[in-house]
Image (cartoon, rainbow, N blue to C red; front, side):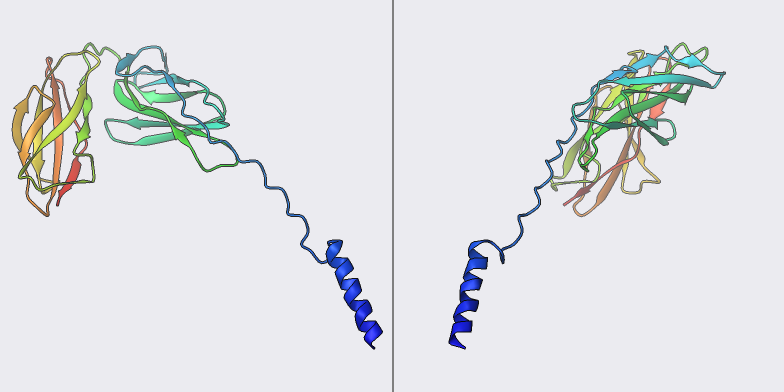
Length: 234
């Protein structure tokens, strides 16, 4: 009996020394996928009138969007937003261009998201704006103003007042002034007056959400309204 126990012990030691009872070699980990970089936009150019599209009819034309190839990107998602009605269209592309049918005489903004197979990480380009050329348009309305600060959904300190800051642009470069609308009810904002600047001081109250929007006006009387922005006061 003792002999058998010794033999079992010797066999166990041999198996351990030979790796018989050890774990199998782990499978090699797949190489990490390098995330894609952001594309650089090329056309339509920023803050310009797009007049290189192909006219389809009085209301539509096709425009070919172009951007640089992004490093490590396999596909792209083109995002286009109609600034008149805020409708957004998304198109997937395997190359660095895509042709889209757009409404004529309408302002748009666009950006591109780079994607790579094997990773959920993406990269987003800058956002550009343009007017798609319309029939007989001699002077375009300004682009809707963009918020600078306070950023939408942000929280600011209760200092009694704060500066609303925005960015305005116009393909005709004839912006004249901005009308500021402000209040605590997004459906009933009060006009606080007009300014030629891109900033306006307003009175704020603690524990309150404030809403604001900007009406941009050019020398021909054309106007555009921004989206409604909001921020909270501590």
